[in-house]
Length: 59
Length: 194
Image (cartoon, rainbow over all chains, first blue to last red; front, side, top):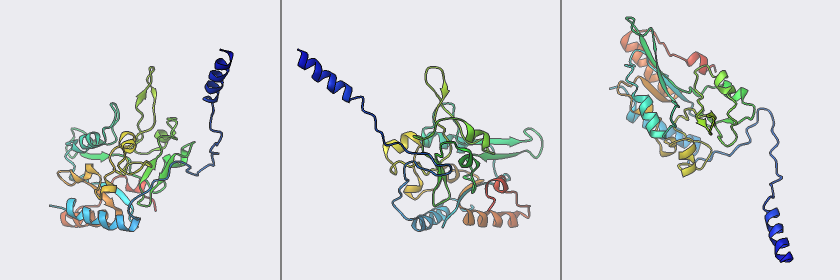
């Protein structure tokens, strides 16, 4: 019984582990998730310019 | 490279609020938050003007400058976005923004201020494009689908324009010449200083 209690205590206490890797803040520097795009900025520009001409030109 | 901008032609806006509704529906914006609003100047007076206002994705964004946790970033397209996992809901960006764009949903039992929410130019956020997390936190990512913001695309009078600044201003310049008016690009002097 004593061994079971020790085992359970060890498992439960180990669940209290906290990630020690802290992101240090630097003023003016974005350190959040990186926004990944499928197309490059140049490719997006071409696609979106075409879309603008399709949808938003004057009637 | 493209530099995304919004332009609202006050001569054409008929205050139908369709842009507001479209935005709310497309992004499933939380109750009490409006990413876009239509403001009417001199309401009821002859010559009144209406303008559709949201985040203008400023070139030197004040919200980005004042954020104490630096959760804002500007994409290569010039769209100002933020990481909601970093936002602490302090409200500084709301005070700094000249357009009143940042909004805060009420959260918790006591209605405390939640993570900031604002127009994303339909470009989502830093989560993987069109993932469930992105949809839940930021709304649809239309730019990743090769589309422009819905508010502008469905504007019936084409008062609201959204796209690359050069393309948008070319179109607007032609309009002004045609109607022999004066170019009044509301908010551009505040938002796009470069």
